Length: 342
Image (cartoon, rainbow, N blue to C red; front, top):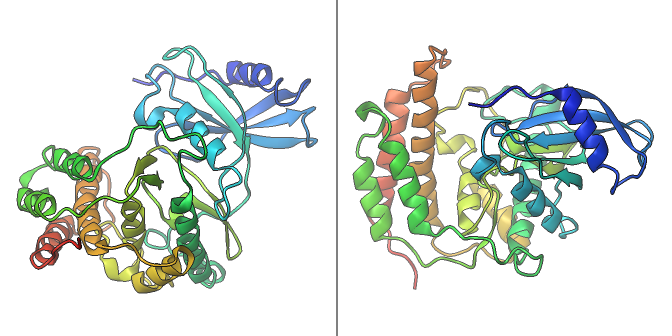
C-alpha cells in the first residue's frame, strides 16, 4: 500500500536535485496537480531558476511501493529525454531527476509545466468553443503519431529497451478477462484463438504511448502542445497506437462512452488519412489491429467496471452487459474473413 508523501521533504529533495539544472534554485510551495493514475503529480514554485517564479511539475512514484512497470517514473523520464527534439513530436521537457531510495523514498523527475486544455470528447461534453477545435486537434494528433512512429529507438539511445510482441499483447488482455465475471468476458477465448490464428507479421518496434488519445494531450487552441502520461509506453508494433486512437471516434462504439452528444471528433477514416499523409502510407493488416484493440478495450473496460461495482460507484448509465460482449463479438466476426498480407 502506498504511504503518505511528505511534501516538505519533497520540496527539499527537489531543491537538492535542481542544483545541477539551476545552481542556487529553491523549490517551495508544492501543490497537487491532477495527472497520471499510476504516479503522483505536483507542481512546485522555483525561485532562482532560469525563469523567475516558474512553476514546474514533479512526477513522483508512490511512496512505499516499488517503482516498477507503470510506476517507473525514471523510465518515463528516459523516454521523454529521448524524444526531445524529435521532429513533430511534442513532449514535456525533463529538467532534473532524483532516484530516491525506493520504496520508502520514492524517485521523481521534474519537467516544465505546459499550459493547455485536456479534453477527451468521448468522455466529456466540450464547450462549444472547444468542440470547434476538436477536429484540428485530432488530425494534428494523427500526424504527430506518424512522427512518433518514425523515430528510430536505437538512434535516440533506446534500442536496448525490451520490446512487446503481438502474442504477448493478446495474452495480456486474455489474463485480464480471466479476472472478471462471466457476464463481462463472454466468448473471450474464442476471440483470443482467432487473434492468435490470424496474427500478422510484426513491423519494426516503434515507440508506442499505450493510451494514445486526446485525453492524454495538452492542447493550445487547435494545436497539440504536448503528449503526456507515458506510464505504459512500450517498444512495440506502431499499429497498436494507431488502431487504439481510432477507438475514440464516434463510430467505434466505445463501451465506456459517457458523452452521448456529438463529439466533433473526425471519423476513423479521416484520422487514418491524416496519419497516412504524414507517414507516406498506411501500414498493412490494420484490420487485425482494429480487432485487437476491441479485445483490449473490452478487457480494460471490464476491469474498470469490476472495480467500480466493487466500490459501489455510479457507472453513469453505461450498459456494460451489452457493450462488452458486443466488442468481443465484433472482434470475432471481423476476423472471420481476415487473412494477413504476406
